[in-house]
Amino acid sequence: MLAKVLSSAVLGINAYVVEVEVDLASALPAFTTVGLPDGAVRESRERVQAAIKNSGFAFPAKKITVNLAPADIKKEGAAFDVPIALGILAALGQVKHARLKQLLILGELSLDGTVKPIRGALPTSICCKESQLAGVLVPVANAKEAAIVGEVDVFPVQNLVDAVKFLNGDLEIKPHTVDVEQVFSEASQYSVDFSDVKGQDHAKRALEIAAAGGHNIIMVGPPGAGKTMLARRLPTILPRMELEEALETTKIHSVAGFMQPEKALVATRPFRSPHHTISDAGLIGGGHHPRPGEVSLAHNGVLFLDELPEFNRNVLEVLRQPLEDGFVTIGRAAISITYPGRFMLAAAMNPCPCGYYTDPNHECTCTPGMIQRYVSKISGPLLDRIDIHIEVPALKYQELSAKEPGESSAVIQARVNRAREHQSQRFKGSKRLFCNAHMGSKDIRKYCRIEPDSEELLKSAITKFGLSARAYDRILKVARTIADLEDEENILPHHLSEAIQYRALDRKYWL
Image 1 (cartoon, rainbow, N blue to C red):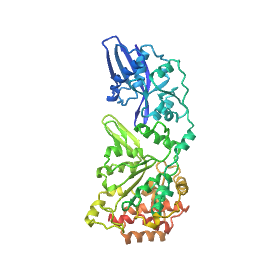
Image 2: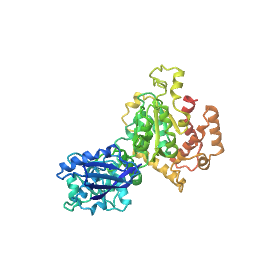
Image 3: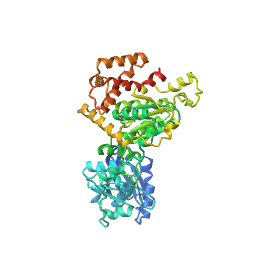
Image 4: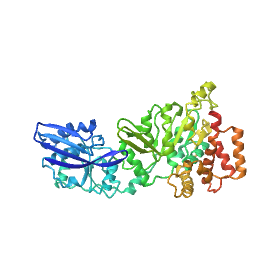
């Protein structure tokens, strides 16, 4: 007695079809699962046996062999519980085989037969569409997420009994549908706004430039100056996500298991703020069973590293590849997995160990050597990839007590969108350039040409202020973004002057 059930598993952020083959043999009772199952898959036998019995079905006293094909890829998670249970019942003749060949089936079983939510519902639905199957059978909690794809019939089930009745034609379950446009619109609302920020006009201007050009930014200032508050509002002024971006971001969060049942789509720019005690695997991704890290969870959004010097140096160094390439490759002996990881890096730090080096209201207790050791924890190659450095001073009472709200995120975002449109036209046809921050040396020479008087200004600034050689290209890229914000085709002297200000920390702290 043999039965086949179609299911799926996730590799990276994409799903592939898995054939769950169940064979019942007349031998001593046993339950064996093959096909490179992990611990959670092997433990399914206990859940499946209890769920079948508690749902009112007879569990066979036979030798049960379950094969998960393809057998050369490791399978993990509890999503195979429902297909294994249905395979056993189909082999017994209690479930008709016709629909089993048309649907992808996933779900974790509780001991009473209830179907619990699983990870990766969206990639599974996309896989079903690409495989031209009739639809997917998923837990009720995952129905909204799976239905986002469209053109795929999504059948939600609450328990094993309902799944059996539906497959046998005794229960009608209408395909779950969602209004993608409405869901996208509702999910694209932010809970914070730049109008909440008092003062800090210089920092807000720098964040606007960073958002307009996709530049990485670091903020240096004493505790309580508002660095974290500013960073949390950075996603609200980035361009609105397109549906394609939202689907890709949702796939990552779904695979990582971070999707809430009531949430079908990640339509706002992600903001990830890991603690400084995070490991390199937690930041970049990996582990025994590879999972997306904070870098991938911040894809299409902002990765905020607060107290930057407190991070382990090895952890910070692993950021260099995704900052450069926009993706993360995790290699293992048996397989190599690539996760997307194109994000804006926003970092914050105190100017010294005690935090009050630049605060006029508090006395700094740090020696020059302590300050130097503190800031030297940030390596040159990482700093090389941060275009904008700004100081965020402590707020004065007059600024804190001001009753007039600041500029809203919507107003700032409109200017950012206009600047991004200029960049889209400039880089039209390029597959690697999406904004000014992505320009290399060759692109800078092509798109950031300056007049002789501007050249003299830049030369004078680098000579007088002792700016590093790496600052030259960064200044030109930031100046190009400032010109885009002003709808200027050429980089003018005042654009360069402002861009030079955003490298002041280069000479003050690191040289």
